[in-house]
Length: 176
Image 1 (cartoon, rainbow, N blue to C red):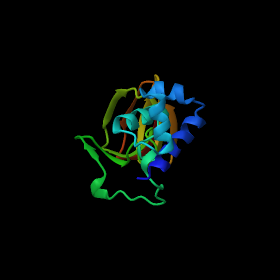
Image 2 (image 1 turned 135 degrees about the vertical axis):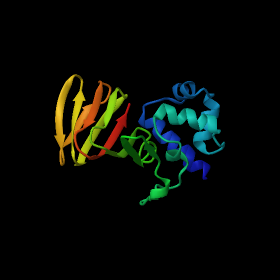
Image 3 (image 1 turned 60 degrees about the vertical axis):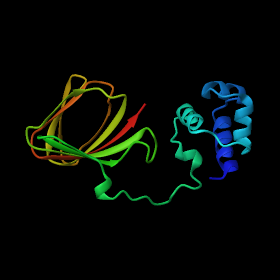
């Protein structure tokens, strides 16, 4: 890890956010001297400081310590996390933090009659129906969805789903 590159990325992001060193230091719980030394590459940031910087900028730590973003990334099928229950399966296609700490995607497959209880999640979702049909309730309104339909909705409002047939979909979530 090249300290000058790490510090330069932090400085660049701080300036892009319009923060002075003094204000930024206060936000991350560090002294202005410590921030100056990190930004110039004279000092390596601790994991705690990197975590604070990541939280303030809402970016993964990797954004600051990776030398260069990979132009190709593969997640083997074996490494994709899965959630199973008797009515449906969810496969995490890409986890939050891979592209952005606020974006994730999953593949959903449900049996006919499967019901997903009403829930609220902080953010927005986009869903594409690959196969089958369902009734999707959002904020008190019912929507019949079928193969090829796509929806975008405020996931902070109550929403639920009932599969009418075998259902397969892809969901991209943007959290806030």
